[in-house]
Amino acid sequence: MDSGYEEDVTELLQQWGEGCSQARDQLIPVLYAELHGLARGYFHGEQAGVTLQPTALVHEVYLRLIDQRRIRWQNRVQFFAVAARLMRRILVDHARRRKAQKRGGDATRITLGEGVEPAVYPGELDLIELDGALEELASFEPRQSRIVELRFFAGLTVEETARIENLSPATVKREWSTARAWLFQRVQGS
View (tube, rainbow, N blue to C red):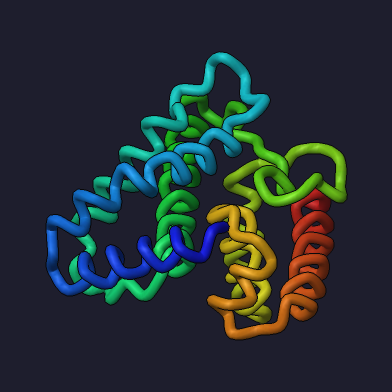
């Protein structure tokens, strides 16, 4: 990512955090493409019957972000960490509603490695199972859970994740690998 771009985005985010709606209005088109690309990655390979589309997901994230007044935006990485958490909640809620409507039918399925790097493990993960497994992981390895959220749901690089978590890239790689292995075993076993 171009450092000039990141600096511009960081400055606009900080202005937005201070209440400048003009900065917010300038930011949205800039970040929209990144959010949309990330959302498209979640739906890559989905069946035609999926009711939630990338654009709808991005719009829902936007609506939730627009009302964030308590957040002091620091930089692009922090923004995408918050967006990742929102996307995760929206996707899980949507999957739960679909599953309830189908009385236990198929939940939305995605691959754990999508959007960040090729999956080490073949197959797909049920998003609701993944969310439950991440909650369980967070109970004893909160850092690994945050790393998965940043890498998988926000699509952040190892370096960006390291920066936001104040870790070395090597630590992020190790924790990411360990968390993915644990999640794979946890989800496959259920």
